[in-house]
Amino acid sequence: MQDTSTDRVVPPGNTSEEEIHETDIVFDCPHCNHSLVIDYRAAGLTIDCVECKQAVTVPIPSGMIIDDLDLSAGEVLTQLFQTRRMLLKAEQRISALEESIDSLKLRRKELEKSRITTLHRCAELVTLCQTMLKQNNELVATVNRMQNLLAEEQQL
Ligand SMILES: [Zn+2]
Image (cartoon, rainbow, N blue to C red):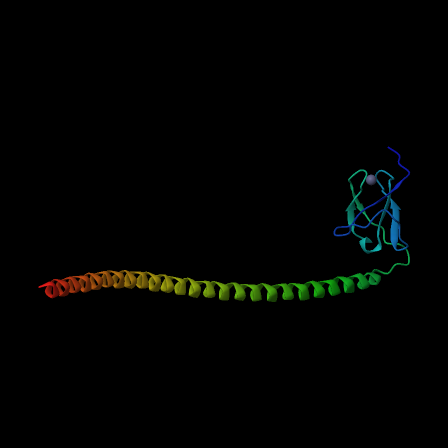
């Protein structure tokens, strides 16, 4: 199958689009002759041909010193440091959140305890009110009885 288009072999972690950049390596698959394009950092690596899926070694362009790739190693290292910094920040944020969760749990426990105490106080107040009402009724009955006795005494 002969195809004249050039397919970009997307290296792992790279989602770049169809454009060919100056720094790209353009070469033909030795198995199917399909034209391939890949980022210069893949020079010397083995990849799978997008057309025939066979293993292909990316040629190292003439004049390209493999030391040039140190730049990408530096970039990778920078990314690694950035990622590590972000990870550290995320971990700090997580532990801060965990601490606030713990303090919220403690606060909730305290509130629950004071709620129960309040409930007990309310129940006792209701009982005392009922006792007072009962005593008040008895007092009224006693006063009425006394008034009746006095009235009977005055009628004699
Ligand atoms: Zn191929």
